[in-house]
Image (tube, rainbow, N blue to C red; front, top):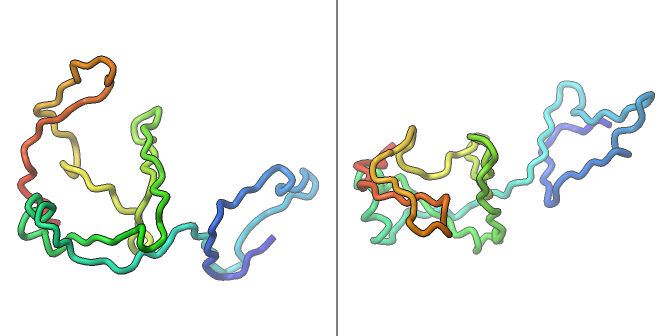
Length: 146
């Protein structure tokens, strides 16, 4: 089965099951037509980005970076399923839930520090019912500037 050139916007997951594979003698192959590019896109375009104006949020951001921090009201744009952030079984296999891409590149979830780890002030809770939760007492980042 060949798909014509284009971007196909999906509102539901593409579910293929065994009968969609054909048989060993006559397999079904899904591909773009030769020389064409096909993209199956399940994401939404988010618009109406605005500069952050909340004084409480701005106070936590380096003054030089403030003009680079934008926000969008996802619910106002019909996005109400934010997924669920889940830890994976191995390092790097966690599921971030909602994902954001910009110019076809996945964006990293906001975090500090941007690379590596901050090891100061980490402690396990005394309340064993909340283990393995770690709490952090960390200094305010000195800069979130790009």
